[in-house]
Structures are given as structure tokens and as C-alpha cells.
Image 1: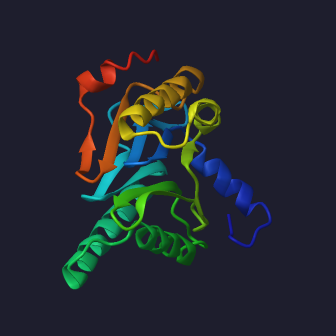
Image 2 (image 1 turned 120 degrees about the vertical axis):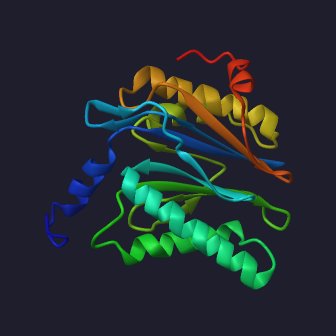
Length: 219
């Protein structure tokens, strides 16, 4: 379909409603990211063990929803630019700058877009914990908590009822797991398992199977 066709925005929206639920929360001491592990192609389950939380730098990560190839290419581009920034400036790239760069890349490709929806999240001493929601046309928003993907309406329902200001990452990751578990129970494109990552003053780390199992989420 041609980009100037009036139906083009609806066509693009349909292309990215293909499964996945991811979420991110800001905390007083960092950020938490969570995502399911199912990759689907329509009603076909292509992979049950996809890592949808991608580390960009030790202080920065992004979640991916939408087309796998487009998302992987964007992750590689962001990693390259984060490394170049660190080498050139002897410091890490600010979270806001990384989000704006990702937004600019998507905006510049809006006529032949990446079929993705991105959450960019990170923690620096200057900024604290920050999360940014970026759509395939480059729109950039920031909130206290964000969810993307086809299961996001369910995840949002849980997050809006349970989120509280001033939470720690150890409190927030349990909430994130329950939010993704709720989406798994109610959305066919979301499923199989849950990955969780925390970014704080100690950097990026992923939760172990034992830590996630201890939460007791049912899905």
C-alpha cells in the first residue's frame, strides 16, 4: 500500500497488532522492564523463548514489540550509537538523548517504517530512572509506567490500579510480573514465559528463574 493512501495509517496499525506485551515502570531507585517471551505470526506461534528486553548499554535497555527483524536492526543501531557516544564523550549517553535518537530514526523512516513499538528505559545519576514510549512514526512520550503490544490494555488495567509513587525496584518488579501474567491469561498473542530486567545504580541485570517464580504469578 502506498504511504499517501488514506488507509495507510490503519494498515500500519494492523501490521503491529500481532502479539506481545511489554511494560516498564519508574521507581525511586531505578526502572523495571518486563515482557512475555512468545513470538507469533498471526495465529502461528513462531518462537516461545524470545528475549524482548534488549540491553543497549549497562545503564540503558529497550523493549520491543512488532516486527522482529525491524526491532533487531533498531537495537543494533542504538547499541552502536551508545558505544560511539561513550567513546567520544567518556560518559554514557543520557536516557533522554537515546530516546530522542531512536525517535528521529523512526521519524526519518516514516514512509517506509520500522514495524515496531519501543520502550526506551534507563537510569543515570543525573536523570534518575526514565522511561520513554516511542511508536513506529517517532512519537515520543514519557510516563511513570508504560505498556506496549496487543496485551497492553490488560497490563495497563493492572498497572493503573496498583502503581504507587516512590516504589523501589524490588517492589515494582513483582507488579510488572503480575501485569504481564494478566495479559498472558487474556491475550492469545502473549504467552509462554516472562522476562524481567532491572536498571539501577548497579547497572542492568536480569532476574533469575527462582526470583520470578517466588512472585507466584499465575499464567
